Structures are given as structure tokens and as C-alpha cells.
Amino acid sequence: MSDKSKEEKVSTTLFQKRWKKFKSLKRGYYSFIIVVIFYIFSFLLPFFVGRDALIVKYEGEYYFPVFKFYLAETFRQKEVQGEANYRMLKEQFKQQDNDNWVLMPVYPYGPNENLLDELTEIPPTHPNNVHFFGTDDRGRDVLARLLYGFNIGISFSLIVTILSYTIGVSIGSMLGFFGGKVDIFGQRLIEIWSTLPFLYVMIILSSILNPNFLLLTFVLTLFGWMGMTYYVRGEFYREKARDYVSAAVSMGAGNSKIIFKHILPNALTPVITFLPFAIVANIFSLVALDYLGFGLPPPTPSWGQLMSQGMQNIEKWWLIGTPLIAMFLTLLSITFIGEAIREAFDPKVYSRLR
Image (tube, rainbow, N blue to C red; front, side):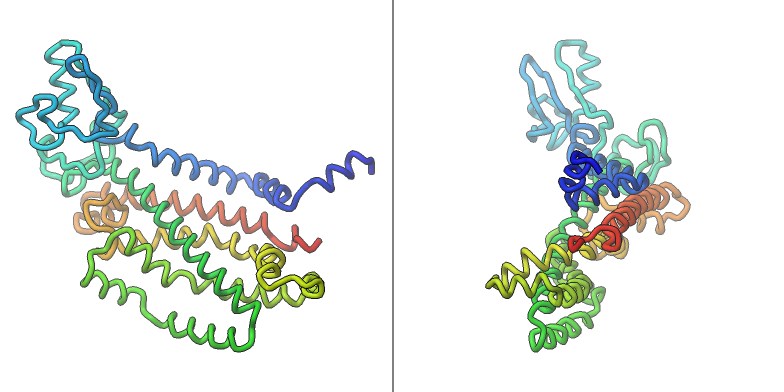
């Protein structure tokens, strides 16, 4: 072997090897790219999907409704109460044939906008060339609610997963590293806490408090950290018996240094492997809670609420079909990512101890 090839082999880090393996798994890699692009795009939705105009030129002045609220009186819309109706304002300017103009998003309908005054039939209405996925039973555009619901679902799941894993990894590390009485009492407390029925707790809390994003995040985090604790605890028990930990102890390394610098990096394989599947589970949990009526309050865009409307109006196929397809494609893509990560982080292929 030449010196150059030896140098390249030595300079390749463990992460680079795993990333290269992940990229070679095309199904998971492309799913990762697509999900990331859609998630980033979901934060820019007001510029592409929404009822608020991007720019309004009125009597020589420029307004930016996408960033600021304007009353209808600002543009002399006497027939409109509250916020200006920019679609109506655009048609009004066209009829006046003057220098005033309105630049609307590509799809000019908001997720919480009631369209009863504009619909020609009683909602829910069928998909057409104006409302691509139809409207729900409140006259709101289904496509807009699906797109905004994607952002809420992914964001909610990521926050819950990160918080749950932070708690689970921390507690699992303590139990596995110290062992003894700490482990025994810690395990008993976890077993007691795990016996609490999650759905009953949600029903009780929903009867006392109005569910919202923060409350649901808090409750699902309280019930979501226990599973990862067992995996991390087992990894710590295995890793702390290895020679490199004994060497660190003999050199006078403190507990915190041994835990965070030596053992934890070698115990993260199950954490990273199960991460995408935890995200899938939390998305499904939010959809299920919304479907049952214990989730995010109306009119928050939600796939579960659309599915609930679809079950109440079973003949309106688009109300249950579109959120089911959206959820299926999202969960399938994340599952593909999870499979690729699991194979890329397989300790039998790449390990820090080799």
C-alpha cells in the first residue's frame, strides 16, 4: 500500500465512514433530502401559501401585509370588517385600472381562513381548480391546512423527541454508570411512573386545561423518555467494563469526564438508530390525539382533525384521503431514513473501539 493511500485511510474519521455508508443507501438518503427540503420550505409557507399579500402598492406607498397586520380601512374596503381581504382588493384594483396593485402568494388561501362567503356550495366542497384538495366542513382550504399541519407535526415531534431523549439519556447514563442502589431505586421509580395510563392522563388534563402546543409537548415528554433509558443504561453497563474506562480511571479522570467523553460517545448508537422511529411515533401520537379531540385546539391546522372530519363525513373522500396520504408518505420517508441510519451506525461494521 502506498504512503498516500495509507494517509487517506488514517484521515477518514468514523463519522465520515458512517456518512459515506448512509449516502450509499439511496432510499434513505434521498428520503432524508426530501424531508429536509420540505421541512425548510414549510417555514417559508406564508410567502407561497396564505391569505396575506406579499406586497401592496396603494396610492404611491408600499405595504407588506405578510409581515404586518393592516385593517381594511387602510385600503378603504368599506364592505370588509377587520383585516383587509387582499384577494378582493386585488380584483378591486384590476377593475379600477390604476397604478395600485397587489402581489399575492402562489396559492392565496390561508389554513385558518373561513371561505363561506366565497364558496358557491355548502362545505365541505369537492376538489377543483381553485381549491386543489377541496375545503373542510368549516369552509377552510384543505391543501393549506395539510401544508401547515406538516410543519406543526414535524416541529412538535422533533421537540418532544429531543427533550425525551435528553432526559432518557441523562437518567440512563446515571443508572448504568453508578449502578448499585442508584440503579435499583431508579428502576423501581421508572416502573412506577410507566404504569400511569397516558390516555387517561390526557383525558383528565383536557377536562381541566385547554390543550395547546406547550402542554402537549410537556405531557408527551413526561411519558416518552423511559424507553431510551433502558437502552442507554444497558450500553453503559457494557461499556464501563471495557479496558479504556479502566485506563481512564487509573489516570485519575473524574466521573463526569468518563461519562461524557469516554462512555457516552460509544453508547450513542441505539440513540441515533432509534431517533427517526421516535419521530415517527411522536407524529402519530399527535395525529391520534387530534383525531380523538384531545390534541391541538381548533382552528390549528392538523391532520388528525381533518381525519376526524372525514370520519364524520365519510362520503367526502378528500377529507380523510388527503391527510392519510400525507401522513403515509411522511412516515414512510422517515422510516426509510431510520433504516439507513441503523445500517450506517451498525457497530458490527464501524465501531469506535476498532
